[in-house]
Amino acid sequence: MDVQKYLARIGCSGPCPPTLDTLRYVHLNHLSTVPFENLTIHIGERVRLELPHLYEKIVSMRRGGFCFEMNGLFSWLLSQLGFVVTILSGQVRNRFTGAYGPPFDHFIIMVKLDGHRWLCDVGFGSGFQLPLSLETDSPQVQSHGVYRLRTQGKMVFMEMNSETEVPVSAEGYCWKEVYKFTLEPRERDDFKAMCEYHQTSASSLFFCKSLCSLLLPTGRITIMGRKLTVTSLASKDQRNTTKTTEELSDEEITEILGEKFGIVLPSPLTPKDVEIMPPPAIY
Image (cartoon, rainbow, N blue to C red; front, top):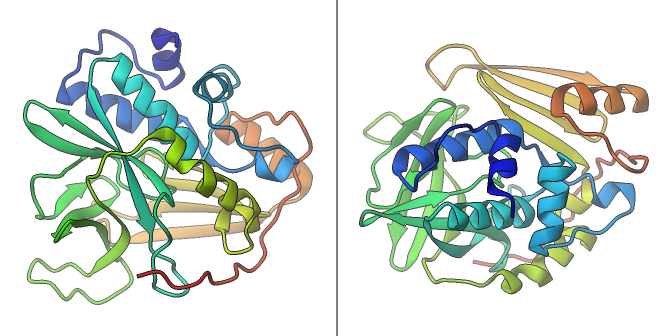
């Protein structure tokens, strides 16, 4: 890996020693510069997880990826910068059934720094912006939302405040479970089967819907199928947001991918947005 080329790709300059400031800096910049996208699946190609291939795709070709790609490569960068990195397996909560996906459904990262554990995730479409502390279950307020990590036995639940439901907690939040995980260390190869699943299963969002999404300073921009959605924070109160949507032609999709996401695809894209089949419930 050419570390400096990777740092330049995500807009980071200057020394990057293994400190908390650096961790926050590279995490936020990664989310702000590298799109969360699954377009490889929808141009007739296959997602590959070999690190040199991911580096070529994300850094050299200036593409994005989904969790196995983004966190897979980002964990390598963090290791190269001197951080102590542990790969973890997450299970994402299905928005249709309310149940969780199987183990290795989501690739996430834990960093240990000065005796403190931090959860990192640059491969979730609308997650947290800065690393979350694993040493507290208190609300962690960030620019685009409020999050918490709630421990129940050996399981940790990543939750975010719902902007559309009535607050029920003493702090005035309504917590929505996003995904769960344990702190058991995992290996990269453990995720190969689920990476294949997400490219071929009618129960996977990634197979059923072509998408490309990027964090903005005041919100998020997303193309799903042929629909462009721009979400903006209406005020410093993260509960107030505005959303605009627009249907796009093939030509407009290509134009916006280049202008807004910096993506030039090597093959024609087939936009897709079909119904997701609810998977078997896994609790």
